[in-house]
Amino acid sequence: MEPPWITKGRGRGRGRSSSVVSSRSSYGSSSSSSTPIIQRGGMSLVKLNSKMQEKASSSSSIHLEDIPENNPLYAQLQEFITQKQSNTFATIAREDTTDDMKTYEKVEKREIIFLLENSDIQRREEPWKIFQRYLLNGLYFPGESYKTRKYYETLLISTGVEFQHFSGYNTGENVYNFSKMIVKQIIHIEDWGISSMTERQISLNNVKMNFTYWDYIQAFDKVLCYNNERHKHTWFIKICAKIFANPMPNWFLNWWSYHGPTIKILPAPFLNLYKEWVKISPDLNKLYQQDHIPYLQQIEQICFFIEFSIPWIHKWIPEVDFTEEQIPCLYRTFYNNFWDKLMKKDPQTKTIYGQELLDQITAAVKEYK
Image 1 (tube, one colour):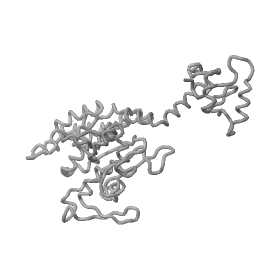
Image 2: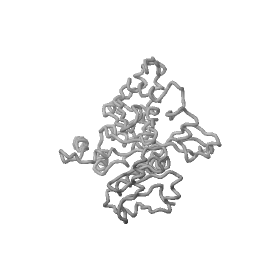
Image 3: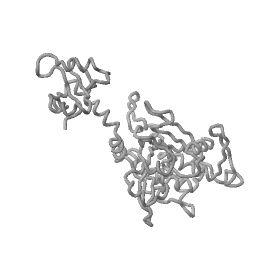
Image 4: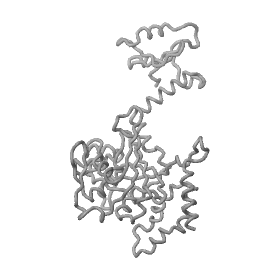
């Protein structure tokens, strides 16, 4: 099948085709049979209506391969085709599944968002559409309708967590490409009040709302349940070192098992320092003297990331799968990656952006020795 455009004008023959004059004079007219897309000199790229496509296939036409790559028209045509393809749902879906996922570490644990009915199995390849079937548009977790993602974010802001959101070009104000979450404080249950059910208050959209310690714990999970319409949102997460001064609550260690990275994402310079640090860290030595050590297989790595405030990039995708009892359900699968800017060179200093952090870890290792 011929493409729905032809190029007219100065080709192999002499003179200018009268059809070009006719198409130009009728541009914008409802009776026009073709619409110029790109014009350059005596050449026009013309989009034909459906009635003219059959005629175009029998007339002289030029394919993309017929245009030399050094011809400016080739670049314009390539750009046009790419732009059109990028707007199709198939292309977006394909990008979603292949978007640099190979560079991310897949977290072993995954979260059950909610159970499904057998009729949903047919939508196994369309997990994002299942959200629309069960929840409000833009909501990615079940629960009380007033406890939105913004509710949990406002809650955490009031308790020592910093957020920043970044929108892309030509996107809405509340449509984010990536976001930052910097945890500056972790509140222990002993510091909450008389009871874990003691309520604190926030203001959201000029409405006073209460929350308990259990809402606070849930907020660390729920606040990360954002995605944009192209399903390409990522989180920059950093845990400040000062929270390392106190023992970490077990619920936070459980949170890390879903959202936190392992040393598998570390580049060689950081990984080599970790191997030295883990043998001599005084905090680890104190930890090993306890009668019970939760999350033993990962606790060393968690301590390393937190002590030196090493950030990471976090993202999630939904998947349809089955529980052990073969009940279909919607899972949330998590991925982590190293913040690669730390390994890129600063053009002014000619050193990598993460050099200061590497120097800090190196100094700590020397001190511990």
